[in-house]
Length: 428
Image (tube, rainbow, N blue to C red; front, side, top):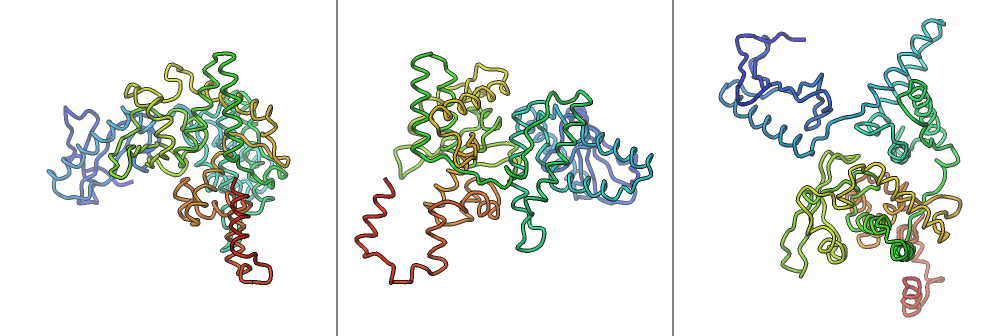
């Protein structure tokens, strides 16, 4: 580690903890500021022992000071507004490191070859770690959602060009996660073991909900609300609509904890409605991402449910402080009502909130016929779109049929008028 040139250190009374300096072997200035040990990253740069800093890429003191002060202001502002979240839980530090260290000690004591252990450790940190960053690992629902996202990601990983990871290999990754969680529970750090998918479930097809089915669920939820006056049913209706209306959404606490401050109105000269832009923070793929809502959601939900709220209010149940318990309640209510309507299970596979995301992918594909547009629309990888979201849809099959040139075989083609009639019937 290079040594700091102590003669170049400068501090500032109005910028507490900020310090700029030069290393003895470098001509450019660097800065460092203390942000606390509960901050994991700022602008994709890791915070080490509570300290955040990097090169200012200038040899001129005045330029370095201006840059450092601006970075300080921006970082502190993001921390205060919640755009940069404080880490209350660190799965890797609290559990994973201890698990691998304990196993390594046992291997050494028993004089066993640790090559397989090193391989497992590398597999975890290369592919799995990112899905357990900054999450409450004591909450089973949150862990289950992260594991589902991890499985979907692993299905898109190419081991060699054109060859994706096998389901049997993914099962081995799930076994690593299972052993880590058992260690965490044994140490009293986790209350329960999350639902680890078996090979049969990993290999199972994931089915989307369709608009008519979600309409049936919303109608039944509203009937429950009228009978009980329990607002939980209204919140589930609103949450379903938000997952549909903002396509980059993923079911989970992130979508539930969106605040009014994350919404912006943009004037639209081609519509009677404004464009509503929403910023999401700390998603699976991006620390910050923006997208616009569908007009029907703006018309039916934004003006009645969001616009009147205070700047820092949650858009769902702003009076509820315990958000994790709220999400668990909404999730269970959705599963119960969907099950009562015989919609929750399809061909042996369950359809929780996350299946709405599959519907969003299909709707974007129907409009655009473009894989990249779907990937951008739901904030994921194009390879994952192909393997997980569209492979079994009717619309994908029709497009694939044409791509293969099968529609050129005129022997089996219907007359044009009959084709239109057929399509009209299928779309109803």
